[in-house]
Image 1 (cartoon, one colour):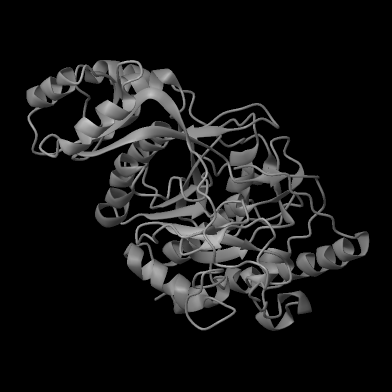
Image 2 (cartoon, rainbow, N blue to C red):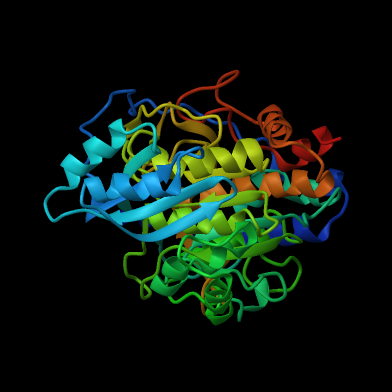
Length: 458
């Protein structure tokens, strides 16, 4: 959910941090790093209890369901099962052995149809609604380079050992490539938010054709796509530049993994300042494309407490995709914890990494969600990145703490691309700074230290 968050930094602070960061980025010796890179100590908040609040109502598309077919089910029997409940298949997504179908129910019969299909385990392995969620971010003013988070996470020291190179899929509003900070490092990507892309299934060619749709039609859809190299909203560009903004080019800030590449997939769209809304089906289409993109890291900065994309019971079809990505494709999925300032007791899942946000003092931000969902934390306030105009923007939100951790994962995978995903997560955890030993409900395993993570990477 989007909430109005505003941050201010004094001119004196900005000048001090700008000078410190320009020194840190230009110096190769760790011993010469400025005092800014001293250990950041995380502090547990005293006014954020572990109390479950009322679960918000999730918005979903009316008279529409998502079903994942059982791999052993006969296609004709699946068709008959849908006809029995007077449902019509309108769109589908295939990823390997997984097939997800978007169906239209009879008007006003969504709950009844959902109940019947959920009980039909012979034909359907998962059934859910097509939920809609907004991006977890709030931008404010442009400013000059005061990227405190890079020094706090010891990025200048890490860059002595490597600046990245791994591909990261950013599922968002697209990515503007006209700005200097991302030029030459953003692939064409795909627009999974268009009706044509979803209906024809052009983004699924790498894993097979869809029922009733020829390879030729799918190829035409893929060719017609303009990709996702433009961003009218801004959110996707901010996220991408947090990961991979170019270093030492005198423009805006620098990404955590500045030599990495971005594979943008548009799952939401809106004009600048509007609400960018992603749905289960747009995310499913995007994940299917990720499987053939070559990216092992995905960032998804959309959601809500308890009912967001991280909740497996109401997003069961989508979680088939998530678990396939983790267990079969060796992928790493990073989600933002959300900006509702609430305790979220949703079950912590091994195939999702949820990230909360801290401020420059090492405290949980006043907007960050927390709870059993959290795996890591990272700076999420006073973050400087590239805007869609190519100039510097200051943003805040867990939308940006999530790609910051994804960027550290990119540094690790760039050093050793053969590492399995669980090994990358183990290195991230071992590198963390935290308020208490081990895991806690505010910061998960803590804030990854980029330099230590690369030292631990074989």
